[in-house]
Every structure is written in structure tokens, then in C-alpha cells.
Image 1 (cartoon, rainbow, N blue to C red):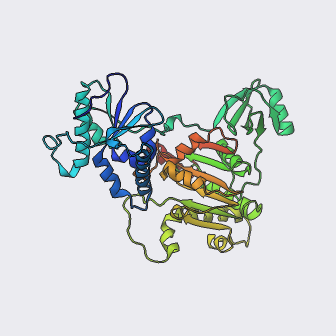
Image 2: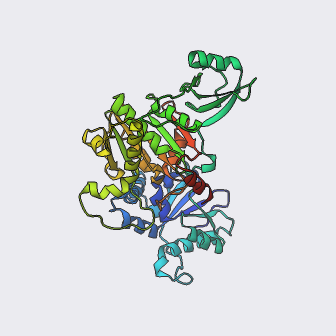
Length: 453
């Protein structure tokens, strides 16, 4: 017999498989309400548990959570419901009384239709009060639920709206005395920084002469403002072309910051600035043992299939954008020096100053004293981001770059990808810095294309 939903405001959330595979912790994300999992979803989870992917890992974790709940309550059948620590309950519904075949006899979509049938019966038992909600990341399933007058929602937990994402910078109008102190000492105490984030970038405007501005940054403890100095020599031949690039280089060159995130559209210089800084701090300053550049492997458009050769040959097409940036930096470094030939990236690799590898092989590693750049980080899930950051050993700095609007991973979107997730979570941490770059500097054509297309 289908249980009647509560008559008060306690809701019943029916979870789709894709929600569980996206976030195993979704089992505990609905506070004091009831979570219902159709037994068919457990069978679907079982199909993914052997995959050596993020989805497979999540499938195994869901099974562990459910098994722990079973043991925690002395083997009480999950079909009868078990309480959760947050005041809610979780139940695996056997769907014994659901008449799925009489309306949705489609074997190809049997699991989806069974979930809808269960939600339909629960909704009818609750007199259509809107207390039964299907939670799914499948757009078409939400449309079908709506047609059956069942509430349906996307799984919003952990999402960060990109238009609300911190840019890492703001503008302050300050008295001329403060600017004078900054020019004199490079740092000035300032009390009104409570609303600012640690290491937030600032454009300081003179209250008496509004045309006069100074670039600065909030200190890590938010007690003072530090002036950003002009870079006359550049970094490995790369010079900042706008205030956002000045902010980015200031964060990248600060060794006290162990995590820097650079967000921006194509052509804003995110990866170029990060690689130039990494080479400078590794090859010249010897602060880090080497520069390690990594990126997730997702094709743009249709994949070209099997690639011959050893691992270096196979990785070359995926890492070509990184190689292009390194070659550009090396050429810029030797520009104007007659008779000087730039070192190729192969020489940097052979000397151990540069290492490039896919993120596939980073799990289980410990990475000490390295400048690690994670390019195209918007294609990573929050869990993958966590895996990467927790690999950082003593003395390692991690830089993550990406554009939340250019995503090739079908399992994340602009609001749920790992890049925006880490920006939001680290926005006020003393050891982290962030800036959004908006002005394209690659070429006039690239800038116009980024705006129009």
C-alpha cells in the first residue's frame, strides 16, 4: 500500500539515479524531510559501481552510505524507512503497488517511468498538495513530471550562480592621505575592510582627485591595504596589459597564497599569465622544484578516436594549448636579443623544469614544492577539484584557470562545476586569492568573437 504523505509541511523527495551519481551526499541534503529511492534506482546504481570513473566512485559511495544506514539501525529494512541525524528519514520503496505498465509501458525508459509512477501514486495519496517532489537532473523527466502535475526540481545543492560569483575585485574611494601612505610605504592600515574578502583586489580612487587611481589588495588578515607595484620588467617577457592582469600577476607571484583561481572568457590571458609566473618562480627564483601543468581531457566536438604512439604522443593533441603558451612565452622572453634562440618546451621538460600530464593520473599522488596549474578547471566536478587540492604537499601552489561558460563535460554545467565551487568555498580564506578577467587581449578578432558568438 502506498503510504500517504504527511499532511503538514514535511515533504517527500523522490530521487532519480542521476542525482545520486552526481552527489552521493544528496541522501542527506534534504534536512527534516523524507527521501524516497525507488528500488529500481538501486539496480541502476549497481550497473555503474565497477566503472573506473567519477560516476563509478559515486555509485560505490551511495551503496556504502545505504549499507551503513542499514547496519546503524540493526538491520531494519530500508523499505520501512530509517531516521537520519538531521531529523529526516530515508526509505527505499519496493514499488509493489505501482501500476507502471498501465500508463507508461516503455521498457527503454522503464526506470524513469517507474519513478514517475511512484511519485504519481504518492502525490495522489497526498491529495495533490505539492508535498511530493521529484528531484532529477534530467530535463525531459522534469517535463514529464510536470505533465502529470507532479512537482519536479533540479538538484540545486552545491550550485553557484555564475552571475553571483565573486569577481575578486572592487573599487574604494579613499582620502588622499591613505594614497600618500601607500606610495610612501607600500602598505597602509585601513579599518573599514570587514565587508571585503581576504586578498581582495582593489581599485582605490582619490576622493579629491577622482581621476587618480591606485591598484591595491586587501591583506590576508584584512587589517591593511597593500599597494600593487608596477612591473617594469614583466614576467618571462610577459607584461600585464590591463588592471585585471596586474591583479592576477600580483596574486600569482605572492608565495603566501597557496591557491589562486583565475576565471575569464577565452583570450583574457589566464593560462598565459599562470605559466609565465610558474616558469619564473621555478626556473629563476627556485621557489618551486618545477612547473606542473595539467588539464582534464575532454574533446571539443567529436572525438577523433584512437591515437597511435606512446603516452607522450597520445597526450600531445590534448596538451597542445599548453605547449603553444609555453612557446609564446619563450619567444617573448628572447625577443629583441640578437643571436639568441629561445629554448623549446622540450628542453624545459628534459631539464625537469616543466612537467605536463593529464589529471587522470593525479589521484593518489603527493605533490610537494611544485607550481601546479590546472587548466580548463571548469570541466571538473567538485569532487575532482577536492581530489586535486588534497594532493598538494608542503610548499606547493595551485592555480586553477577556466571559463564557466565553456564546458565540455556533460556531467557539469556553469553552476555545478568544480571551478565556481572552489571560488565560492575559498572566497575569504587567507591563503587563497581570486580574480575574474573580462578584457580579452589575444587579438581584436578573438575579443569580438567572444562577445558576439
